[in-house]
Image (cartoon, rainbow, N blue to C red; front, side):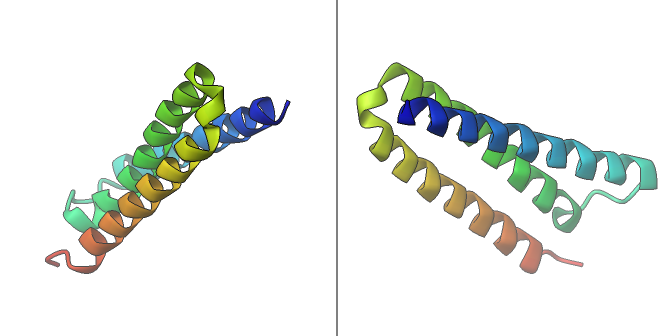
Length: 94
């Protein structure tokens, strides 16, 4: 039962992250913003989180006994992706 709960939470997080990506991308398209590293970093951070969550959910479904290890690696992947996007946003050439 705990594995199902974890999978449901991850699926919800994946859907929310993907919807945020769609919303931010839509704002970029509607406002006709110039595509720079600064404008693209944030939406793709959410896409990265959504994709890594999808992969982790599948890995947990295949190997439920390894759920803790998969969640730990998912957390590290998300932290790395968000830090990479933050660095790209911070050090982008204006």
